[in-house]
Structure formats: structure tokens, C-alpha cells
Amino acid sequence: MAKIRVVAERPPTVEELHFRSDSAFLCLLLNRRTKIIRVIDFRAGALPAKRLFIQSIAQREGVEKVITLVEKDEVASWTRVGFVREGTIPGFYKRSDGHLCGCVIGDRTASIEVSDESQKSAERTIVAAKKNAMDLDDEIRGITLRGVEAQVALAARDEAWSKGEGLGAFDPFGRGVLRLFLECSTKKSRANYISAEFQDCFGHALIEVLRSPRDEGERLATAAGLRAFAEELKRRQIVSAFGFAPADDQELSTAYLAAGFRKTGLLARGIQVGAGRRDAILWSRKLLNPAGEPGIDD
Image (cartoon, rainbow, N blue to C red):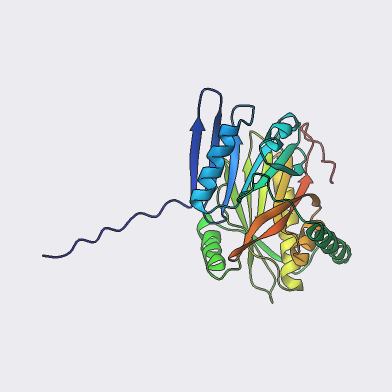
């Protein structure tokens, strides 16, 4: 008699988990690829029960980093249960800013914060990147930009992550989102891919770059791609754009700065790079004011 082999189904890469009680209601967006949890809180007040649920899921899944984006008046309640205010996204809620609170899950109750040395390292990265960005022309020539279907970008994503080169995961960061993909390259450089995930109801967009640029050609192509996405998002009346990058990544920092983004936060162990986590710069750009006028970062 032939043996029957039972193969367990793999859990989804991104999964929604919900916690509801009489006084609490939240959603966890668990990303098993990037090993991060985003908390979407539907009921005000960060009760200890919320923290216990978040911590139990994070420890079960081997997730080290948890983030939530909240209005200003909710920051204090999250810091009381061990989160740290790590950055701000101007215009995240169209007419108000989003405040990013993060927590590194470990044995201690208090979250790990960015070290003084990491803060100094990030500042050195930005100083060097600003010098490089100043040398970029307003119009970057010799770049090929083309919109691509999801399957093309996701295939490139899978290859990059299998080699340990992936930064952008192109996975859902929010709920009920739309996503665009852009391929950017020069004749002499390999193609890189940029994704924009946006929500019309909130008016913000997450920008993800698949790989860190490794030479001048890739850096120019990435900067041109980020600029092009900013213009497309403005056309779609998106108010705010933001992205994350390793805090010591000078090439990617140059591309963000050349596209009009600025540092608005620094996250402890905020991004997965290969098999480990590194501190991450939060890059933001205010594209428009809610009335449709140019943003303050233009």
C-alpha cells in the first residue's frame, strides 16, 4: 500500500490577526518575510492587554520589530506600554501627521532604543549623501523608466530576497491598498524596481526600493524613479509619501535626498537586511497640502 505523505500548508507571508475585547480592538499585520508587525488600532487606549497580545504573537512568530502609526494624542498611551516614538510622517492622515511608535520585542519590558553611535552613524550617512545629491542634475539623463506588471516586479523581488539583497518586500503595509511598480535602469546598470502602495482615503503612500544601489548608474536610476513616482502620486492627489532604508546606506540615502525626501525618523532595528536587522531611517516627503496645493517639501 502506498504511503500517504501529509504536507503542512505554509502560513501566508502577510496575515491579519485580530484582538477584540470589551475595551480593545486592534489588527496586527504580520509580515513573515520582513519579520515586522504593524499594529492598526481601532479603539483608543493602549491597555496592557494589547501589549500582551502583541508580544505573544511577536514571540511566537520570531518577530523582533513592531510599529504603529497614530495621531499625536495617542502617542503617550503607547509609550506607557513600552513603545518608543521614533518618527513622524507629515500629512499621513491628510490634514494631520502620523506619529510612528516602535518597539523591539525582547526579554526586557522597555523597548531597545537607537544607540548614540547609531544616531551619529545615520547623521554621517546623511551628510555624505547630501553632498552626493547636490551633484545630481535637476533632469537626470540616460535613464529608462517603465511601469511594469506586478508579476514582473514580484519575480525580481523573489530573486533579490533569495540572494539576501532585498530591502523592499512589496508586501501589503496597509489594508485595502493599491500598488504601482516602476522599473528603472541605465544601459550599463541592472534594473531596480520601486513600488508605491497608497490609500486614497488617507492620502499617503509607502515607497519601497527593491535593492540598495551599488554603483553610480543604479543610484541615478533609483533617484530618477523616486522623482517620477513623486510626480505620479501628486497627480493622483496623494498628500504624503514615505519609505524606510538602512541607516548606514549612503547610496540609497542619496537617491531619497535627490528626490526631495527628508529624514523624519530613526527606527531601532527597523529593517530586515539579509538574515539580520539594522536601524532604519524614515524618509518622508509632503507632496501636497490637503487642498491640492504643492506640499511644504517641494
